[in-house]
Structures are given as structure tokens and as C-alpha cells.
Length: 370
Image 1: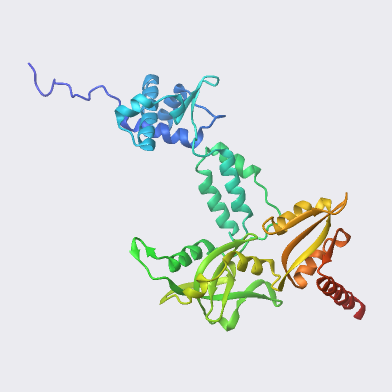
Image 2: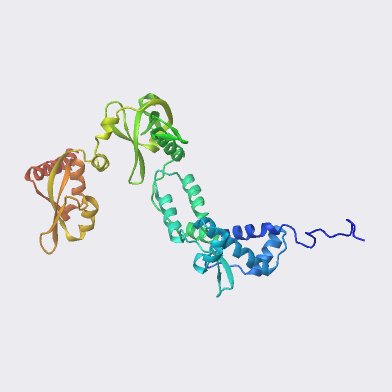
């Protein structure tokens, strides 16, 4: 007699939590596997049992991995299930089988270990990111590779002698300033607005600490752009008198004001490339066409400094070449040339040569006066 008591449930005999297997297998392989660390079907059966309490058979592991590969292809290429069945091949699989090690691993196709290593090196080397933020960002980037690869990256990356900011709010400030400059926020129209902040500087009383300029009063600035130079982040803004720059790691207590930004026309007329070159080269002198002779081994240095646009390079003799470029003549420029000693010489124009001689006399007089 067929009674409810004797009748078997449609799920009788099935192992529990089987629908979780594919997800758990993918997450495990994503975290721990790579070309050098593979896992066999037996390994995965044991991991499911020991780590998650889920029983599985070897054959089901192969089926789960096939489904993972198919779903990934469907999502990446916007395909239907039937289309993914037709197009799935070895090149399109995210989880692949290594016949030499007889195991599975996740193959990264959008990035590789060297990509993530380079990004981590940039994070560690950047001065405007604090040590704590560097570690946090490196951890986030390392999440895109296996744990074994992440450990290798952190072991391999060495950046020495880099002064890092102690301002731990740089990332927060960048986000706030970008919002202040945005035309839209969360899909809603936004009028770019002024920001205010306190600006810090060092004193000899305690070189490890900073104090606020203007006795702690707020600077109010029209923000227009964020630029990076020599590992530091700068705000390019108008302070009511002129366009100037502020280093983000010296800014404190940044706030949006809801006051509409001004001086749009003045910024629109600005040649940003020329302006930043003048500011960050620290020359800020009168621009002149100058010819400098260098020894041949300084060619790369000259190219790095002057580039090739509107610059003429020519051979002088077997050991020298000369560069003719537009430079802003100032003490900073002369100091740069002086750093090469006998390996560099200003040749033309003669009035700049005379100015350089006067600069050398001023430097010499400092030591003679003592």
C-alpha cells in the first residue's frame, strides 16, 4: 500500500548542499590556484569535505567546472546558454586543466602577475599615498591574483628611500575635490563649487609636525584640476587673485562650500601643459632660446629634461652634442646646469652666458664672505 510514510521524497539519497559546490570550487581556485599551484578533482573533493562539510564525487567536480566555464563565457560575451555551449573551447575557459600536474587552476586573461606587480610597485612608490593606504591598496590589488602570487609580489617589491606622506586622508580628499569639480554627482546635475581647507607647513621648532598657515584660517579656492608631479598630488585652483597649485598632502580639513566656482574663463584660456611645466620645473624666469653643450653620455638626461618637441639636437664633435631649447632662465635653471660641472656648458645666447657667470660669482661669494 502506497502511503506517505513509505513514499520516497524526490530528493531522497541526494547529498545536501550540492548546489553550493560550483560556487565554492570557483572561489577556492580563484583564491589559491595559478599556473604553479593546481588542484586535482580528488583535491577538490577533499577540500569540499574538510573545509565545508560537503560530500562530492570526482565526476561531479568535472561537471561543476564545465558549468563555471560556461557561465563565465555567457557573462563575458553576453551569450545565451546554447551559444556558450557552442563556443566554449580551451582558449575561452577560465578554469583550465594542466595535464602535466594533473590539476585545475584559474587562468587570468584580463591581467597577469606582472600587471599586478607593476601596479603594486606604483602604489608603494607614490609619495602622496601613506604607508597604511599603500598596504591597503596593495592588498586590494593582490586580490586579483592567487594568494601564492600575492605573497610573491609583496616579497619582491622593494622601494627604498621614498618619503611617504603621513596624511592618511589623501584618497578621501581626492574624491571630495573631484566631486566639487563634477558636473554630475550620482546622476544628478551639479554646479562646480568652491572648496575650503587649511594649508600646512613645517617649522624648525618641530620638523616632524606641521602647523596651519594664516593662523589656521581657511583658504577658499576654485578647484579646476588635479595633477601629479614627481610622486606628489597637486590641486590646480584659483585663489581669487591668480591660478596656483596646492599640494594635497599639505591640505587639511577640506570641505565643499556649495558656493559656485568662479574664474572659469581664466582657466579656459590657460595652457595647462605650459603652466605646469613652469610651476613644477621651478624655473619661473624669462623664457629664452638657449643652446647647451653636453658630453655624449648625458644624451638620455637631456632628452628626459627637454623632450623632442621644438628642440634641436646636433653633434658637436666625437665626445659632445648640443641642445637648443626654450628654457626659463633663472637661478634654478643655472643650478641644474651647474650640477653637471664640466660636463655641460651654456653656449648661447651670450647674455645668458653672462648671467650664468654672475650666478657663479654669487655662489662663490657666499663662501668667501664666511
